[in-house]
Image (cartoon, rainbow, N blue to C red; front, side, top):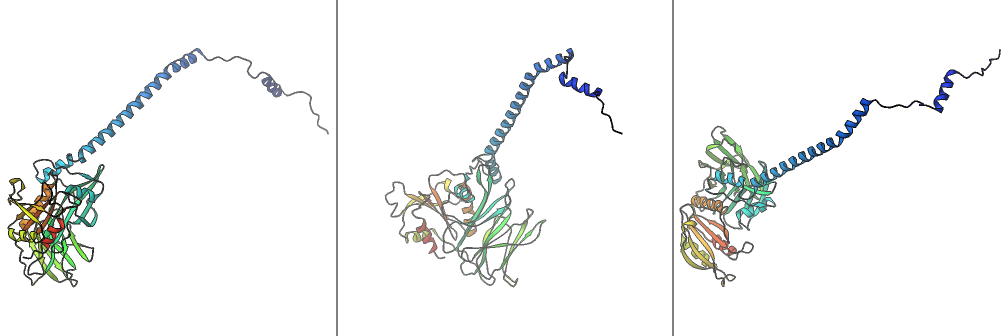
Length: 402
C-alpha cells in the first residue's frame, strides 16, 4: 500500500518560518538596576586605571632606588680607600686606611698595589674565592726570591687582598734542599691562609711535608708545581687551627728524609740545608756593597743617613744619589737606600715590612728591592718602565760573595 504524503505543514515548521521573518519582534530593554550598574562602572574605570598606573610607577621607583642603593654600597665597599680597605687596615694594624687600587686582571691588581714593574707570574690558581699567584720579583741569577699574592674579583674589578714574599741569598758552605716562608691567617681577611710555601732547590727532593701542632696536629703533604726550566715550588694549606711547633720535612723519591727544619714563628722565613751540610749566613758590611756598586761603574753621591721616616724596623738606611750614563744630567739624581741588618732573618722581615708600607705611601718614584744576605738595597727609580740602574745594581749584588 502506497504511503500518502500529507500537504499539511507541521506546526514546528510554521514556528521556524515566523522566526526567520521576524526573529525578535519584541523590544528588549535592560532593567533600571542594570543601567545604573553599567553607568557606575563606566565612571569608576578611569579612576582604577589611574590608581593601577600610580602603583606601577611606585613599585618601579622603589625597585630602581634599591638597585641604586645596592650599587652605592658595592662601590663604597670595594672602591680604593673604601670599607674593604678600612677592614684590611684594621686587621693589619695600620693607623690609617690603606688605599688598594683596582686592576683589570689579577696581575694588574698586584702590579698596581706593589708598584713593581719587574714581576713574573710563574703560577696561579683559584683558591678561597679568589686567585692565588706565585711571582718572581727579579731576575737574579744567584739566590732566590718568591712572592705569594692573593686577589679577588669584585664588581668594580680585581683587588689585592693579602700577600708577601722573601728573598734568600745562596747558602755558604751548604747544599740547600729548599726554602720557605710561613704566613698566618689574619682575622677579618679572607684568603688561603695560613699557608707555608717555598721552592725546591735540590733535585733529590721529591716530596715535602709540613707538620703542625695545636688541635689540628699532624703532617700535611705539599702540592708541588713545576714551572719554567725544571724549577719547582711547593705549598701547604694547613687547617686554620694550626699552631706551633711547625716542622718541614724534605723526602727523596724513596721516601727517605733528606732535610728537615723546625720553627715556632708563624711568619718565619728560611732555607733548609741537606743533611750532612752546614749552613752559614752571608753577612756583608756597607763597604762591601759600595765597592760592588762602584765596580759596575755606578757613581754614588753620599747623602748621609736617611730620615727617621725611612727607617725600617728601627734600622736607618745609608742614602746615596746614583748616576748612570743615562741620568748623569738629571737635576735631581735617583736615590739608593742601603739597609744593613743584623741577620738574614731580620733583613727578610724588614723587606716585608717595607712592602706593606708601600701600600700606603704616595711617591713620585718607583722603588725596586734587592736582597742579599743581611743587606736590603732599595733603588728609588724615576721611571717605572725603564729604571736606568736596575740591571747594574742587580749585577753588582749577583757578583757579591760572602
